[in-house]
Amino acid sequence: MAGENRYVLRKPDSSTYTLPADAKVTSGDGETLQYSLIRAVESDEWEEAGDGRAVPTSLVLVCTIEASTEAAASAEATALWEFAKAARRLERDGRVYRPYRVPLSFVTVHQAGDQHTCTLTLLPSGSRWLSIADDTPRLF
Image (cartoon, rainbow, N blue to C red; front, side, top):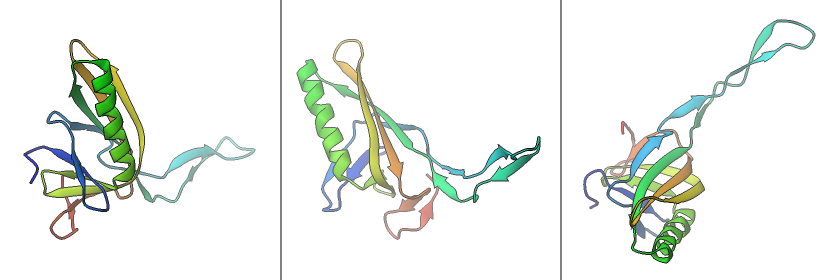
């Protein structure tokens, strides 16, 4: 079982990649409703558009990769990105998971010393975290 507050990417074949211990969700842990205001043609009136369906927002995770060289950091970042492309769910603490369609982006920025900050953005396929035990919706 993963440690407390640990995020794990899981592929359909059940292989896993544990993200660094400092990984955290920084935004997108929810959904948006598809509504917007549009200006009516030939009028100064505004109309509501959209079907009001819930759409999951992109899930953004940030973590730090520690590596003594740029090449080592690049190799670790590439391995994470390749795994994320094949995985289809993000798990937390071995209790809950969030299915996702695809990873949208991965950015690595060199910080001081041997640290590199990584930002992984995923496009969820559902708007809620689910229990690993029984697939019921759960609070994060």
